[in-house]
Length: 78
Image (cartoon, rainbow, N blue to C red; front, side):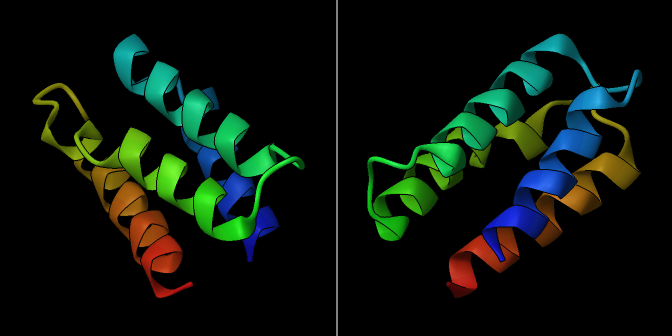
């Protein structure tokens, strides 16, 4: 599950239409999920914290916003 989320975040980060501030938050969420020194719950909470306000960016394309919502949904279910 975490690897799939990281892959999805990586795709968002590499998309040229994503604003830099969103890429920064997405990268931080990926780093949080990849941290091997923490428990899964803590990693997910940190990633959700990074992604919480990303979807409010007015410059974010709608299809990226949908991808972020899907990733957040997956993380919240875990």
